[in-house]
Image (cartoon, rainbow, N blue to C red; front, top):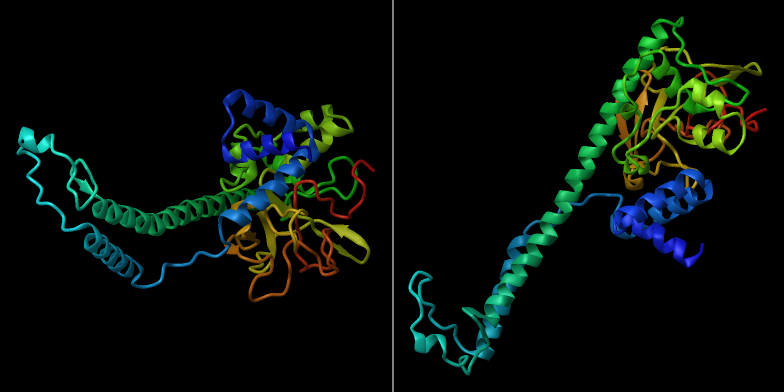
Length: 346
């Protein structure tokens, strides 16, 4: 990656670019799949440096021990610099001669602050930051995870309504052709009026949420894109931040997913990323992924496998991103994932 491009992408991720520069980078990202991959790799690297995947509570008594340490430091400073002067009340101005006096020989003073007071204030500030900042970050992350889960529940309700009108079948991913990708579920739901806004398919904890301009493409737009790079870009994003079930193969024949109200069958999830080990999601800082199951409940999984089942929600039983190997082999694919792994457009 060219150094200037890397610096631009880093600035974009950190929110350090001016508005014209940010818009320029966003235009380049929309037209370059390679640049999107580079941005994804940088995002993963930054996430690894900035936060842990697991939230930890501070050790018990940390605040008390910090205050004791600050008090001990103050005593040591006072022992070296002399006792603190008696301060007059704030509403009682200093005499003119006191205000013009030189600093006390035994200690350094800034206005009414001694060095010892600065040490105490700095210690309290550091201790407060260490306790509060992680708590605020956890709160923001948890809020985004919760909102993401609400989106999936809304999509689950829309999928059930669709199934009720289509003999119990959820939106089918074609087994071949230019629209044979998991993301087709979103245009299908939107065109049928089952969802009323593109925001339902954008997770607030996902890279896509940072763009702020995502819109589910209509079938006319997909048809007008023809074949080539324009269609590839639409297929890669039309499912939003979420992945969708790829169906399964039975007796050599591809079959769509039917609503059987299974509590263990993954229907949708935060979209997986091939850039990450074990194919997990980039959403939520790679901490985990929300998964919508066929019975309508949503669970946040640290790993792609639920604790009570060995089934990986992003891989079939043969270990590939493709339609399930049997009826109960659930596989959730990202927007561009093809159920049979065939070349798109064939």
